Length: 403
View 1 (cartoon, rainbow, N blue to C red):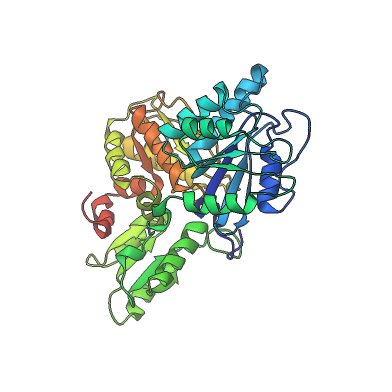
View 2: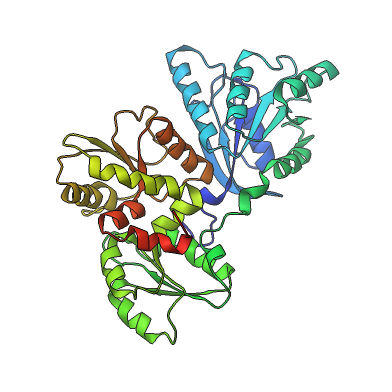
């Protein structure tokens, strides 16, 4: 990923829903001014949810999802509809696309129920206005049934497209930019030391995304970022005229960094920052209580929000399973998921260990935590679990107050 590219997890996620051939793909092309989605007169051209990251004024960085039709048919159609509904778990703003002739029917009512239940801002859009303009009764019914603003557009002539863009900007939740990764913990002039190991797993020529985002937030707070490897940490601390405001480390070198960081200097990890920023840190701290109760044969899910090239000593597939077996002395069974894959049925797991979720938006990360809570399955993330196993969890929570 380019250092100049807004991370996908930090973009507003917009998803279009509607029946087959209602014009979702052509509407996306009209919104973006690009041939992003394949358009065809054949029903069911879009067979899987597809996404495109881009800049969309006046919103800025967005991810737009095109989804299969809500009225898809057959066994495959049922699966496609399920995939479409899964997109809701990461949707910040939903657009329900209608035609004047059909309006809101059973499949639209189903998706509206889910949108309301998840509290997702919604826009209702009558497309193909160049072919047929919706009647006043159709507009009124759509407004009453959706409880959302109703717009009329034409993807062909682009009539109403600019109004739709403005409506999208207004629909984005007001608190979308309120959360800070670390900036709310800093004052201008503070020095923050970032410990970033450079090993076989580190990407060549760049820093990993959590490190990039943390540096950016430190700079936005007017603070100073000092980046070092763990092997130079002692020298970096000694070079400072005053103790740093905080030390933030990659969780994989927690033990060494904790030993070399003076006890009076606050210490935490990138992963724990992300647990606070995107998820529910308190819930993930509670999840550590399950570790002591693990038994032989218990099944553990290790979930990552991205797909990446795995090295021989990969953190998720190799190190954490090894450390957890050593810590518990139990013969545990591990399953792994990555990217957009996340099991619907979590009941078979005794514990879920999740990555920091830097590639997931806040809504999807919180959905995953909610699903775990609903299934009664404890959930932790990498940094929280590693700090717990190394006996430094309480210390690493101190920068955030009481948990």
